[in-house]
Image (cartoon, rainbow, N blue to C red; front, side):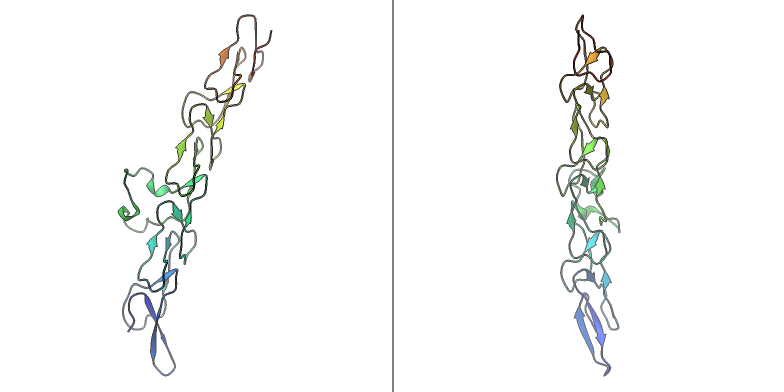
Length: 193
């Protein structure tokens, strides 16, 4: 009869040998005639031999395939979505049911960025910056002649309208041309005489 974390192999002569489950596999039952260990599910791992349960990947880590014995860090531009909308201090141990594992990290939304591995949150772009694609590692300054509306989490830069300009990067507004000067096209970095 085998223990939890083991499976049995029977030989032609009727003898039974108990063998520890390999890394990436587990076996939660005791008794005879247990002939296999269960593969760890995606999002979970079994780090050591002879285990009776799988563990969810720790904070900021994921495993995309079955039979994992370790979890990988969320890459730049992605984060661990299991902590979205959860209170401060929430841990994996607070998780219940079979939604505790993480199969893949979530791409940062447009207007947000993730600039470190192992992240559990995304950060909105600061004033004067924007991110127009998912999975951004950083936000970009508005170019000269453009501005980003006065908001955090912006997804695009906009051209300064005719008669207004922006001569710096990262602008949140455009400036009116001085009297006697003009900017006849949208997106002007300067006014002319």
